[in-house]
Length: 118
Image: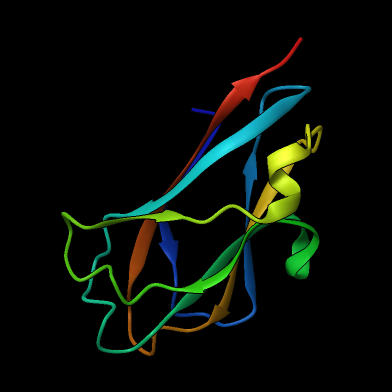
């Protein structure tokens, strides 16, 4: 696991949550959104992972609707952006961008997996 961020508020459109990556060089292999505090199928939230605030830099996982997260035992493997499949990253932080708010109080957990390089 490269990083995790728990209890991410997804009811605040246009907000960023920085997550520290404690490695100098790494490859991202998987991003998982899970453990929603509410049923997200009723009102969509849209969340992505980027190398810069404001949805800038390289998209690790483009903003996607989280309607499949209907309960606390649900998870969603996010599709990695094409550029991620051939890129080694050095960013000390990644940014979780909430593009579209859920519409009521809700949180999710986000896990980023990959490989650390020398």
